[in-house]
Length: 251
Image (cartoon, rainbow, N blue to C red; front, side, top):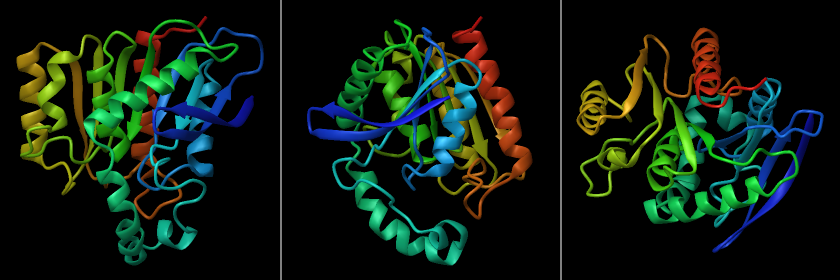
């Protein structure tokens, strides 16, 4: 396994990123992985490595590169729900900076860089995202349907809002497959909002799966946080690898 930290040039600066590839020359199909709000850290590198073990190259950019680099939260803030408020007080403004236009432009830069790396296969990638990364992965496939073959969105929040730029309003741009795994009793993605998303996908004729992981809290895949749910995490891996196999099969 080859795991390196790389610098991705964008129109607004340079984004640090994890680049993980299997051993060998490839070419390996590409998976673009969007982080949760807590940023690049060992847990995300572990997850990228697990995907790479299946024969994929994985790029995990720091979506907050305009504001910060390096560790964004402390171990206590990850593990103690009472300390999360302080973390989100810092991270909230960074999330608000990720407008649809910026996500679209940044995604183009990530894809350009990724496709130029030795051992990465030419052609479309699959984009996956967690928490806020799930929402922004949806925006990425909406902006680049010709370059992104499928979407995997896990415990995403804020996908459906009352704003004119809500991510669910542009699902008609998607030409590939979309998979959504929703957390249970998630204030950032309520049952009514899930229904609104599903109706938009149905009306647009998108090939999609939308599943509620009953009993799993928001953030259920992240083993370094207080929201971790081992059963839901394993279910996520099963569905993610099935999505990858359908859309980017490896020999």
